[in-house]
Length: 61
Image (cartoon, rainbow, N blue to C red; front, side, top):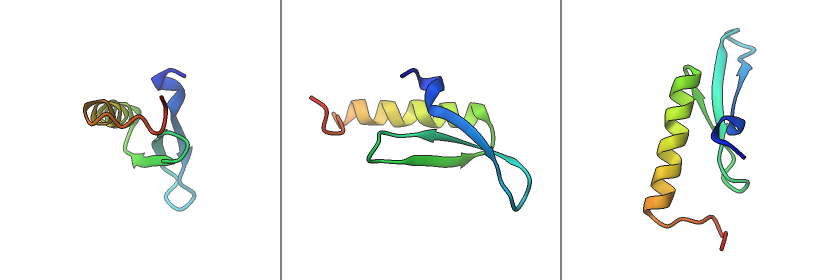
């Protein structure tokens, strides 16, 4: 799965605005909302970097 496959948006039914999200690993769920796609991509990249730095494999071997 590429990083862009993990980024998605939806419309907020209360505000009518588009909100962006990224999906973490299965057990971690969805992160967001973010203001735009760029912000969501940056947050996903930071999430991945953090997990690599702290050797958090999410149970993967």
